[in-house]
Length: 335
Image (cartoon, rainbow, N blue to C red; front, side):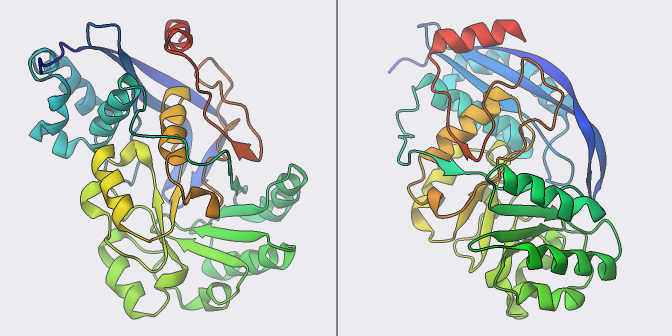
């Protein structure tokens, strides 16, 4: 089979958060990234998005741009084999963008929609505003809530977490996320033992996460996030949860091979991407027949200043847009 002649074009974007996003790793006021379009000369077009986020081991946008500028010959000569280019080993977000573009160009033939809709978890405001924001999200129909910790003192945050747990009704669940910034889980023991806590996401930095929490006997209540930086760090089995950020995964085909082998619960998660990345991420998610067992991490819509980059509707449940290629071409021209 003849290698398709690929041509790649891209646009860099800069978007502003409506309210600065505060996590244990810092305060973020803007979101930047790259959206790209790849054409194969036969009318097939794929889109992708390069969207690194601090703390997840991805490349700098400048490195991604340099690869794209220098890869014109590889796109023309190697076609989609460019996904195997060894330079991409250090550029997982760029490889993920190329993977989603390939899936798009292939018509998502290998990613059938196996579920009709999935529920989205809601992201609570930081600090003392958490309880108030929980009530607001509940009124919108959200029943799984995520709260970022590691920002204040352990004593303060444990008390707020207990207050949040006391607010849980019926089947409502709380998730905590420390972005790897905790040094000791001892003060959090009562919270970890509460059945209303679904899981505690990445309490420690990746270097001490896997073995330490496993030996401590709490792995079943732990979610791996920063510890999963690419295909190469996906555990074959983990008794807790794996939080997957598709835009950081590297090769999606290798991820799908892993997903077939593992029984580990997976939660797919947003990284404040544009409509291009979100649509591809939802296509990947809806191809997972086990995805509707848990709320997914897609509650980021509306956190950035509204612009042409955001087109998916918000709400408790999420779905792909399933636009035609011509509709996405109009979107591309509008940004």
